[in-house]
Image 1 (spheres, rainbow, N blue to C red):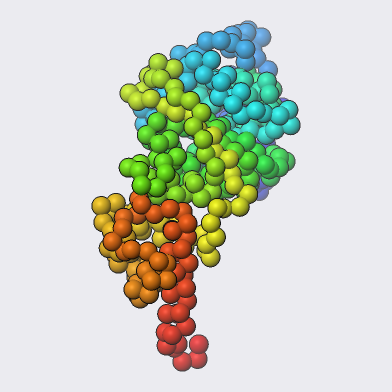
Image 2 (cartoon, helix red, strand yellow):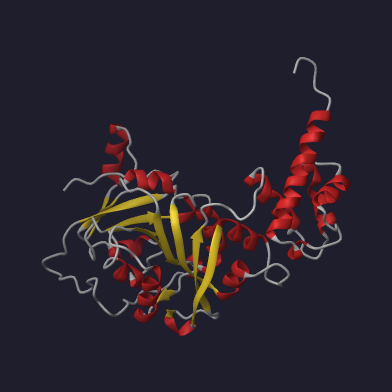
Length: 344
């Protein structure tokens, strides 16, 4: 059998990789491009001497010690897994990106409904466990860190096109980071159906003026339409977490609900406004004025029509957009008025 790298390398590099390849039962694992931090698993058939007892229709979740540093809490209730996949309303031609398949609780039902599943798992022991359970053409296992994964390259590598569907039981400790990373690639996916700590779900869906409303709320609500699907008790996981979880569905917006001159500047401003929640927007902007390259804040408040004594959690998306536009305008005026160096 010929095993291929996830990213094309030179012949000499490929030779060194072959020398490093290790045998694990009927599959070989090969180290991949470090910039992507992914490893593709090449799989053979199940061993004749040891029949595969963990086929894709197996009802029980195999026991494996969860790694605390990876925030692992494995979904162990097939009823919840089925409910999540049914909520996706998959079509036979859909391509799914599954984040953290674990023992395959969701993968089992995804494989019955979608054309292809790209399953990204950071724990190589779990990848080895899953490697022989589904045809490689159906479930493509990627061992690596989702936070370092370039989705554009991943889809190109496998000849798959957008839009894709995203699903996963996200580790509590990096769920926010994963959401922010995926938003960078929101042009590639249609929706996300993800399980989060209930408190994180509250933050995502909270309206302005609520305690949970913050930077993540603005980020998600600017880019997506979100809805809460259902709550999952700790007993559905092994080991059970100390908190409840919530399944939410986020649908990428074709067009943001507000117009801003520069998205990067908009998010930089929102981050500055929520830097210290107990401070007013005036105080938070003063601290960030140099970074935002704006000095005349008085004209900004007037142009935006905002009371600078308000706090960031009271601002709607429309008001944040107005403030962004006012700041962007003030910055442009100050930049034009700034003396230029000779010869520039």
